[in-house]
Length: 333
Image (cartoon, rainbow, N blue to C red; front, top):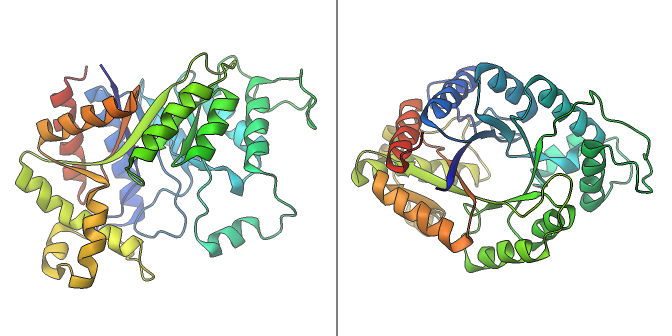
């Protein structure tokens, strides 16, 4: 059976606040563990006021302490903003305290221009992303056999176990880097659902080089999923998601995740209909059996080892109920 995971953004619901959003993420992680999900990942978003997840490694420590078995990970760390050495130390610290439960998902989202400036204002010439990944590999494996500029430098604490390394991406570049470095690969189907993605994943498998971190290729596919008791209820919940995406992708984003009531009252303009229809291609919407069938179809298309759902919908009760219904449909243990 395919493994199911969750990626949570910590959405700030209308009428709530960021602290409450983070506490709700904690409850969602606990519930996901009870239901039998394999992994619970958290995202890194900057200057997006409607989500509270800005520093995944700090939230991960809290979540790992609040749970017992489920793997906790980043989806992901935006590596170009940071020192590979410091990222390796952060995740070794997590691994030291929560052995065999930590996932390091790495991405390179460019983020907002202002965020990039603030994150990198005093830095000199940037390293290439490829070099940063090689550095992460070196620091996680303590490899001193290669002629590396920091050959004898050790990322501490030095522990016996290693976080699982996942490369996140939407195209061939990230897949090639993952294959060359022998890491697992997570494809963001929710951003670019097309046949190109299937080719990207197939190429990753063909080009995969075994490493001390991973012996054979491993593929995860991430999807937006809106699950409710009935298709009609799911469609109703999806209206708020439609509006949230419009807000996030506009020049005037909202400081909160709009409620279903707000979405119904506001509606969608004629000018926005095309964008909403395009965004709908990125989602799986329906009752538990409908969503299960579509997840299985996507998993078969990609020959995926794991599927990660993003239950980024309005209302913690809808998020909790959605993952519960899906777990029951898949008969998770």
